[in-house]
Length: 189
Image (cartoon, rainbow, N blue to C red):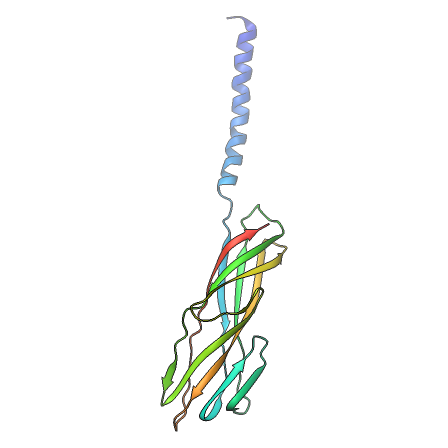
């Protein structure tokens, strides 16, 4: 075999052994990139406070915490306020850009509660979630969250509503579990 072919064969073999470890190192890094994550957490419940009602009445709590009452008298320093939720989206590693999120939010039906002859229902849910001013039980809405400048984008929003109460002659503590189902449907950007 001539020397030039032997040299080329040995050179090619040496080149492959030098490149192979480099390819081996790069490939696993791409295969193990962290996936995007999304969490939604309920931080505080929707609270109407301690109330006195004679017959029937209603109290509305807005997402900003303001309240209005009709036929209901709040007692003392009773605490009322909107529900608060936090949603956190972490973009897949290695893919950080300025981006927008589209999030689909659904509220399962809110049931009425009756305790000791006191009946309450919640209706007219309102939010301060961007692009979604109201959200009714069974309805699905889409919110667009803009200005996500870092790999992790956190959105804190509030939900208010109206409590309608019909009372008997006794008092009761009414509790309404408020649930929201949130899903990231699109990442734009």
